[in-house]
Length: 49
Length: 180
Image (cartoon, rainbow over all chains, first blue to last red; front, side, top):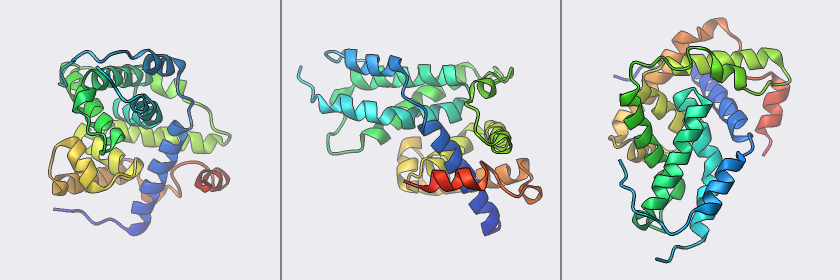
């Protein structure tokens, strides 16, 4: 059963989560990932777990 | 084997979102980056399964989420971020009050059951439609809605929202964040 919460509380949680995410998204991509993607060669089959 | 070079660009473009999801999911930036790296390697190894006309980011989220759950099952007894390593590595915001509130939110998120946490992050933070979040999690849409709803209720409880005027940064920082 869904629990209904006041719109104001719902809004605060949403705003908090989006602000938290904006903080994380603003971080520069670490060089290790740029190098990793750059170095990807011919795909070798790796099973998706 | 020939692979469309733009796929690498699409992967690179998805990394900030993958990292944000992984950090919020694991509450540990080192584990999160390892998870993102494993996701990229795994995805590249199966790039022939990717449908070019579909959403690369959603496909990568699915792989990351599956890898996380595989690892989570192995590490189940481990206490996440028990030494506060994650909090210590966070960038300091200009407003100390806002920074502390973010930590409260992170701590509360870490206390949610993992299925609720991932649903709330995908829908409430990442902004994905319920249908897409359901596909990533491999559950019906109604299950995602229920998990998101329970996660919000639990967060409100943990954060004692009635007693706090605001989560997140101060109004000036919020205004800056709102500008695209």
